[in-house]
Length: 329
Image 1: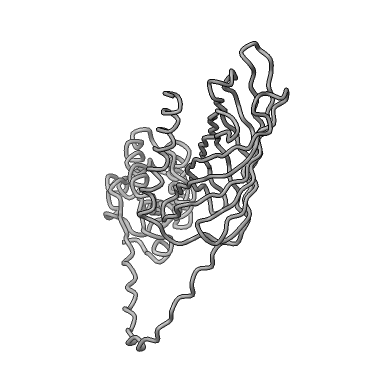
Image 2: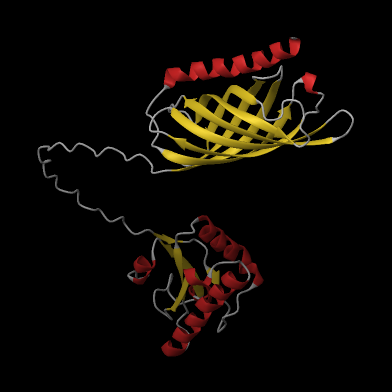
């Protein structure tokens, strides 16, 4: 008696959960066929002298365009007697299901039906008519697929047996998705024409970096003492990855102008080469140019002044176009 009470309590919990879900009931589903492979657990009544064991099955059904569905289920139940003898059983059921559809991805349902179980060795109750009642939950995985948990009490109408079967299945629904209603188009007054705001181009950014690299007389060699300034140039470019830079080489007025122009170009390229190879600056961000004797910072009338004019400067720009349109100060 206590065993039946426990089974009834489990079923009552399922029914209560299903009843609560009806509050959120919404649109009904579109009709379609269902296919549900399942695996589960069979618990025969204690008076059968059968052990609990696994259950494998397949459900074929049809969901009407309403909460109702009909389903034929086949289960293979594997068990054994207390003496160790294997028992194989085939259970057949024809059930009706009532689902409580809602906007949630979880759909509770109730189920009941008739069927029979055929045992491999003419066990007591073989072929008897059985009534099953129960219910479960369907967890939507997609529009046509759901994980389904099902619990049934199986009552033998011709003998005193009350069995239990719980299964977990993957339900596929073969049907068309319900069409969404066409939107209602309401004519509206034409919107006033709004003139677009003029696009203001950002001002180009130019930054003359305060790190002049100086050279010896008639030389394009960068001394080790200049490396700290090279590091500062590399740090600036790393902090402004959207900028490009131009290395500008210069010479004093000693010697021919054409020679000094070539020497200034070599100085600019020497600085760029070190920034790329030793300080990790991307070569695509650097440009070089030599101006020879042009644009001295001081007059070339003394040795000290000529030393100041033998230099390479670095100017960063917000774009390559801004760099190409610029001339040195």
